Image 1 (cartoon, rainbow, N blue to C red):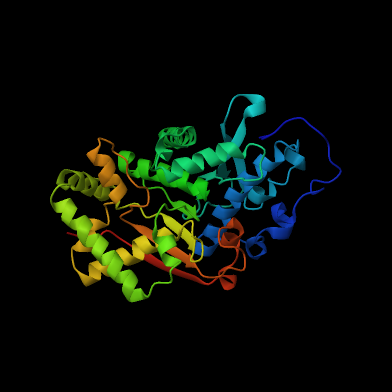
Image 2 (image 1 turned 180 degrees about the vertical axis):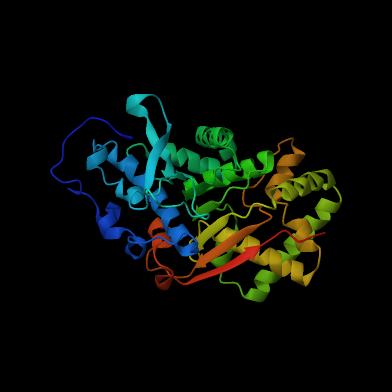
Length: 365
């Protein structure tokens, strides 16, 4: 499949290209020869590479780099994937831009697909601030901040594409992954939530540096002690629990049902401890656990509530903060060598990262 047709010929596909976009220079060499699908590290690296491909395809397109001359194909071909579809926004032809892609895993003849390998991967890119049409990305970034992303065209297109794939292939026979970085992670989170809540389809989801709109990064700049931080969260959770048991009881009941439907879905969240864009996820999961251990029942009651949502509910809106998740596997990287919000850190081997992992689940009543 050609993701761009026509244009200028190049003597070299790497001419004038940044080394970060060239797979042979920046790609994950440690899995280039052999992939172990049962290894979480390998699955993470491949998911990150497919997301990287969506960035490069959109870079290739306006530069008239055709399929064979573009820099993107090695990022999926190296792992036996084929490009099946593109997710685009904008008007036809000149104003169209790529925000995602659909890849199919096609192992070589004679190979049997590993049970942990996907059939299809929906990969969604994040913001490209230096792109000529970056205003489109920035507009959706604002949507993330305002919790309006479910209504944007990208979310609707991605949601419909995933739903159509599941209808055609069937959830029993098709292993479908979602993967996204930054803004793309927010899109993947919205789509994954919708598939889990509305269709009971619990898709493996890889969220790299997902944004979290929270005041906690600003609070963390004050370098509060752990005791002070724990007291702030405990006080906040006590207020939420009290509101949920009184004036916001109906809203709390609705969110309880949402959490029950979402709880079997366990997305993979990959965050850097120094990345202020996604630090809120770390505080949300870790502090709710500490509050629950400190005062049984309070953490469970308050983890599904947010002040923004409760205020919106009072004025007739039904928004839900996407970071309110009953279950997730949180991967924290404390190494800043490869940047704090950079996608490239997530296709590096474990030996080059300072990774820690913890699975969070919804406590039983």
